[in-house]
Image 1 (tube, rainbow, N blue to C red):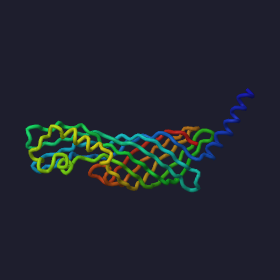
Image 2 (cartoon, helix red, strand yellow):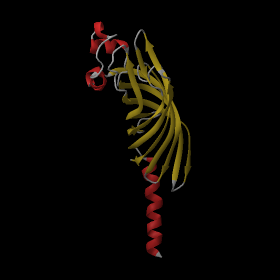
Image 3 (cartoon, one colour):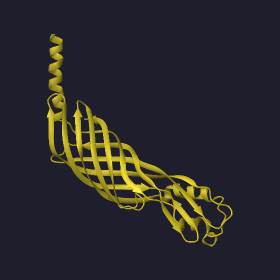
Image 4 (tube, rainbow, N blue to C red):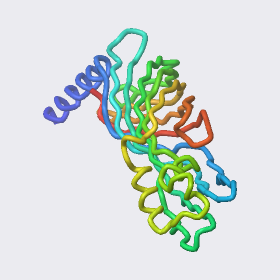
Length: 231
């Protein structure tokens, strides 16, 4: 019995100490981006079609510091992606094989956030509602367009050119890192942080304002979940 009481006393002292003097945390982040990309068709004697897709799954990691008075700083990075089909046709007797392709974006977010209010359960858990904003950076695979096709076929061959190798050449062009699109933007976010012992979890919504990330859009939302370790 004395041993049990000693252990309970140690836990009751140690757990509040770790929460009061916590300096940050890190862990895994997953999410779902919320947007809809409609099918796009370029038609001028030739037809280029990029298929539609809805949203993307995101996975990455995060690190935050809450040792600064009045404000918390965090950084997170993630990869997002979805699939769609690309097709092109002209007057050639050798049609292009449709390409199953992927929209992929790597993103980094830098955020300053502030606690709106907090709630604690002695010896067990604490919860905080946060709100904040910051800036972000992205590198994204390009979307096929007629200008890219002209560069690959030659403008004089756009109407009658042989398309038998276009699928491979187009895929090589779109996946070449030198052709990725770089962009920056800003974002706002709000969410709930829950600490249970050493387990650190976040559930938050983020709205990003950035061009050239999602095709045809300059803003998009995402719902994200973090699970990690609180320091």
